[in-house]
Image 1 (cartoon, rainbow, N blue to C red):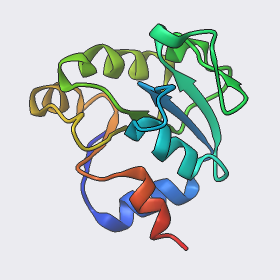
Image 2: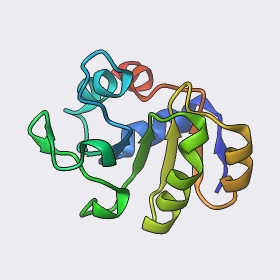
Image 3: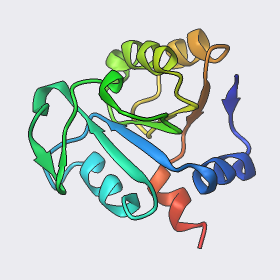
Image 4: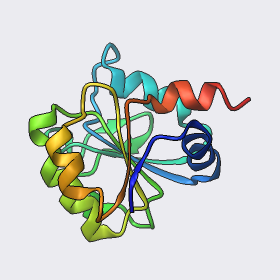
Length: 136
């Protein structure tokens, strides 16, 4: 477990992942979570998590209330949340056995990263949508 900063490692994770859970998914098309999820959804099996919108649909998929509801192993937990709310997401990602927590720009918390870097792999300071666009 580590904070992953090497660009080639970040690209490898994005390339090899099959299942992505977007935490903080919004129904608002103007939000980054909506746009990035839309950009990468053809590349992965996608699950959307947001307790505020649980049960509602986005892009034909039902929004889940927590990572615990994802019915398969999660390769990337893609986080679009205020840094103040990231610690419980990290805890849940560890509990469900997720491979990597990808903290989208603006979601990073140095304290939370330090607290969880020995429990789960973490990517920060990189946007999944940008990384995926660079893979082709």
